[in-house]
Amino acid sequence: MLILYNTNAPLYYLPYATVGMIVLNIFVMVIMFMVPPDQAEDFLKNWALTYGDGLKPVQWVTSNFVHGGIFHQLGNMFCLWGFGLVVEGQLGWWKFLLVYFGIGIIQCATEQIITLGFDEGMSLGASSIIFGLLAMAVVWAPKSEMSCALFLYLRPILFEAPILGIAGAVIVLQVLSGMITSLFTGESFGTAMTSEILHLMGAVVGFGLGVVLIKIQWVDCEGWDLFSVLSGRSQMSEEEIYDQTVKKEQQEQITQKQQQRVLTKEQINDFIKSGQPQMAYANHLRAAKTWSDWRLDEIELTGMIDAFHKQKMWSDSIPAMVEYLQLHDSRTDQTHLKLTSI
Image (cartoon, rainbow, N blue to C red; front, top):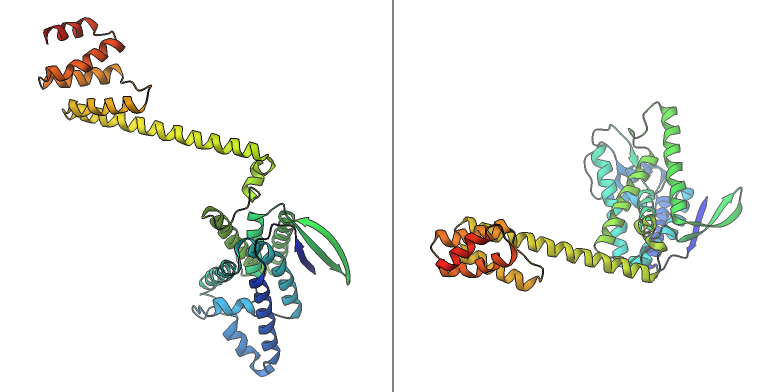
């Protein structure tokens, strides 16, 4: 049995909800022990997640608190404590409860929908939620270490391990266990609702939630989230991170400026094509005040001048022709003659 009892991950909140969920799980186990043997089957049918018996949303909650035995529950509660510390330490108690029940409900609902065509079967336990919390801890604090105690023949082996390493080992063991089970059952891995598949489903839900909560800024991983670690950003100094952030902001400003310039050019050309050279030239003047390096291409400028002349706006075309003579030379003689005649 693996016991997770502490972590060096930054904890901004005390684990009130984690302790509350552990107490609630133990309370439900006590109730199960008090159920008479002849009523145990009915109890499980009502509380566990049943297959092939329609959708029962109440079971999407209750099944997460029912366990198959004392060792099943002990293993889950020790892991709930460890990963609950990390997740609730970032979220606080009420957000943690939303995440806790959210993982359970999403996973159980998906599971019961998939198994609507089954003739029988059920699942129970908080394992899927715990795998979801494990995945969230990996997203938020992959390099933070967990203090672990591994009991082999009642002898504890104490060690520290990074969350990413623990999660990787657990996921690999789940996949290997599922593949070995499929060899004995003759069913392909992933086609039956084995405990390994249910655990992995919970991990997928938790991973997705972990990413979403970073994006909506419910958590601040201070540059130590999974994506920052994989990209090497977590190894940067504060000055390097600041420089990278400034460069990113500058690049975004440059991109935005380029987009605005392109849009302005498009508007000017639209005005020229629609026979509105005054509007085109007014936009051109505003752009020149906004950007010191603003210039119209020769084709755009001559198109504007021609549009003025088509509408016999001779005086209005003079500034555009003067600008043309200052910037371009293909039609210099023709433009000089036109200016003279005007």
